[in-house]
Amino acid sequence: MIISKAFVIASCSVLKNTFPISILRIASSYILMPSVADEISAYTLFHKEQLWMDNIAENLVEIRGGRGCNEMLKLTGPIVIVGAGPSVERFKLLDSIKKDKDALGATIVTTDKMLIPCLEANLMPDYVVTVDGSPIIEKFYDSKLIDTSLVKAILATHTHPSVIKRFKGDKYWFNVAYESERNLLDGSLPHIDRAVHWLTKKPICPGLGNAGAIAWSLAGSAGASPIVICGLDYSYGTELDAKKTLYWGAYKNKYGLSDAETFDKCYRRELNPWGHDVLTDEIWDHYKGFFFQAVKTTKIHTVNVSPYSILHGTNIETRNWDGWVKTFTK
Image (tube, rainbow, N blue to C red; front, side, top):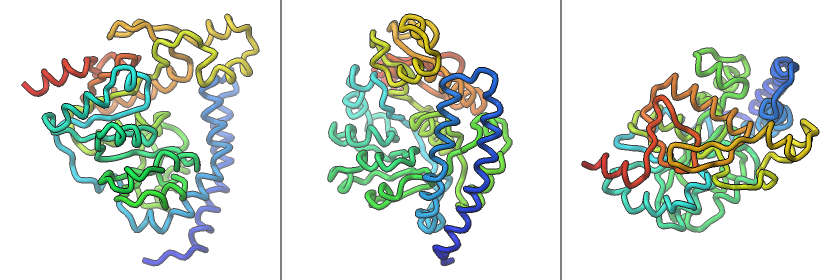
């Protein structure tokens, strides 16, 4: 089927016109003292909707002619998800994964930010996942190491066209649930997400707040078990200065409190199961709630080997890498 550019633009214009309604609905639910995480979610959707729809319009011919993430081969053996949390560098986890990959028969799925670090460590991922639609993501694909690799990409349909042009390997597509991760997890589907699904003809994945969690969700849908998460820390590790963290300025602007009051309201330290006293904040706790709900709903066997992580509890097994490998390969 040949799709004209005029059809693409017209179709996406219809989608754009529906977004303000959904934004108003989201915004109305935040009137009663929204958290910073709530405001960031609403702000992101409101200010990036046009970029995302433009990206889909530009990519649509390739999306419709390409394969959905549901057409990936069913994966066997463990899947290792590589996120960008501080555990990865601090505990040299890329070296550990490289050492044990073949013995495990593992499939490696990395977030885009960690693709080049993986390749520089001579660890060849099987898949890379991109969720963000910003053009800045192209830098995560800007390496000759990628051009000569066999890595395959799992891409959100709103991925920026510059990334699509830069990456020459095999591609699989999915839609991010724009309106409500919780709605998708409980089986319902808001109208804007249905519209994007109908337009692109590709599956929908809950947003879950970050690329690592989406990689986990996509891996779970591919059928492999267990899924080992590495670098999904949801914390700043043992960082002592909250002023160096990503959202300090947002918290200060939102609440107008002193430094000490801002820390007490928005940050907390947690002694995690690995024995590390890590720093986290309101936004990571917000994303953790999405992840826990997904784990509860899907019951995917998840092993967390990220020593700085705050993801632990029911259905999440917490281990050190070497100990888990020894048990798994017995």
